[in-house]
Image (cartoon, rainbow, N blue to C red; front, side):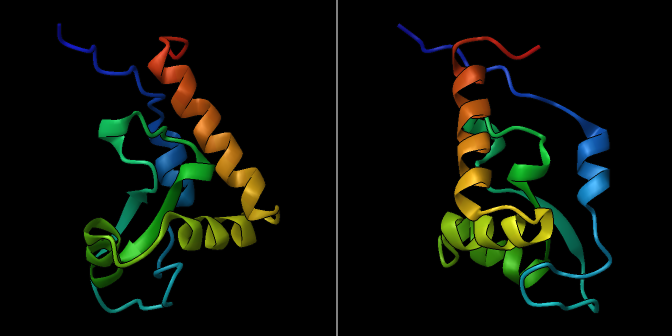
Length: 105
């Protein structure tokens, strides 16, 4: 039996809204910048401010190979959103759970 892929919350406007001209982690501006999904898209990670962070190519690679923890990234997002990192984490995880049970359009 194959498990169906979760329906992700997709929102290109949310991605563009968090796009910064610098890396939110290290501050670099001199290399390619990418909007990173903290909970991966493949895992149902939503296109939502709480799950998105702008990273330089170096930090983005570090995030994908596991050298940067989700907790560290959510800490930065929490500072950006002026909320506690735990609130950011809870929102992202709630949206991911909703995607796994098919509640996201």
